[in-house]
Image 1: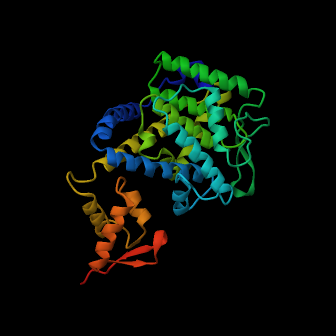
Image 2: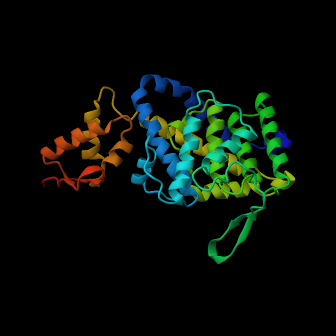
Image 3: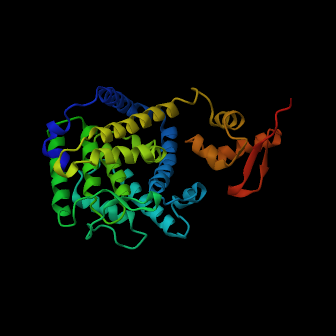
Length: 351
């Protein structure tokens, strides 16, 4: 809530480059509905692809890794039995993000909603979710064999007030349209992570809150391109920007711009990737032709069906298998193994 005490002061000195990015994002947001109307099959495929990527990446940022083939099984309507803690944490994030995506009109952010999301995150682990922390949880760097404290969040005694104050101040700033919506969302997430309200899962909680706040302001990009995946790919910059903006936070002397520039940059990149994907398929090209062209021209020399599925959202497994069988009969590819784990290899092109 420190970022909202003097909002004009906090947001003074906005980098010129950031204004360009904000304008670019708003233009892309305006085209979302057009793509949803014109390419419903592709959009549905993108949403499912993004769902798997977001769950996998958000846990991967925290070091909880689940193999992509196993991940695709765990997001099915009837998933297999969870085998370890990594899979239980994966399932918790799955439940939380699925709940958010089902909301046609996202509800206003509240402490109750934040704790509900946290309860879902840890729902398959130990039942300890949905409660504020009772002990101090400093952010530490354990690299190099030492335990260096990077940032000390609010104490457990300060946390309930700080969280309520953050929600109230953000809502007031939003209602007053005191700044660009993306900047207000970025400040909310920055303050939430500085408060660090729960004992475990603060990073995952903040990413879910980001998705929820974006959707509430009409930025549906998190449904079609994984913000979590982009953060995972730029994890070092993510932490660097966050810690740079948290310095001096307790005294409201912090600089929010490293974090805001990072977050707006990620959203901009995701919108650009979204437009690349929805415009990639030539008009009138059939799904079978798309699969054939991908396998022969773009896929790795050795690949699995899952890779084709991820590359061509909106194309069914049945269509993919039909094209693969045809290419096999033509001698263009060969199968190694059988079933879902089968690998396919392109035949060498005659010289």
